[in-house]
Length: 155
Image (cartoon, rainbow, N blue to C red; front, side):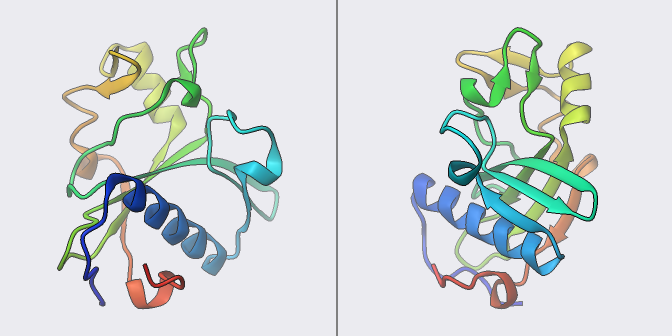
């Protein structure tokens, strides 16, 4: 597996994660439409992905840490219903020099259930925090990504 060879800023990590996820989804046969091509800018997700009769609204996050969830933003939630707007949260973790990034796929159904039962709490400007939720490796579908295959843009 090839490894990331440069240090990225938080904004660059986010862009890197979005491109990696888009390339991964397309390689799996999904048709991926960026948020800006779907609707106005505050939709609460980054991509609409369709495959067969399945549609996913995907929010992408990137982090240098191996097992954490980056801060979420207010527009990513339906605050009245206390639920994630996207149907899936894709977190690319381990975006660090000398490490292989890992794709963590989490269903919004799980997140929303954890919000309802109090395991995940809203903290200052929609920071997701919860003892269970921060152990991403225990419940996310994890896929180690080969940068040679999915990093077409060579960040």
